[in-house]
Length: 249
Image 1: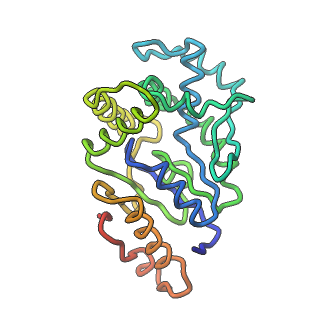
Image 2: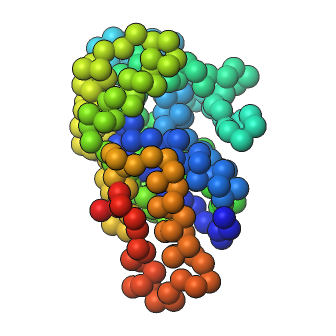
């Protein structure tokens, strides 16, 4: 469907399907998709490989700062997708492991790391027509985004989705450990001092616990039609209250 030159910011908790949903939205609209979480995972992977974070998740800040000075993270298109590279090395598969997931929250809470990632995202968003997902896109990175969505789902549903994803990649996982990791990440992300995970005041909540991707796409198409089509109400009050389908709270 058609849409104007806007930024769509999708924030929310881990394993709510933000990335999969954002990719579908970008493809549907012909927008560029950018995964901010992949960038934080890329920094985390670099920190792990350089020994800047240990098994207890203690961070060597001087070492991490040195890594950031020489780190070249960028997205490259592969078909309809953008995959993450570190220099000439594709790291898309390596950043999706549970080992990286276990350490990404403390790394992403470091202010210099967030500034590093925000710089990449700001440059990518200059042309608008992008869909970005993460945890602070609508509140910190692009507070002026024209459409903000905050995704959530029942923790047990999220853990089941994440465990299935990891098993499909050949990892042996325990769903209890996955749930623990998600709950811990939720707490860290929501309580960090720098850009904590929180819903922007003007974001629309999408609870997809019981929704298929088809349901979610129907939901956002209606949002876009209501807000941005020529038939949409002209008053700010009317435009800010689109008639969303089940799943929006």
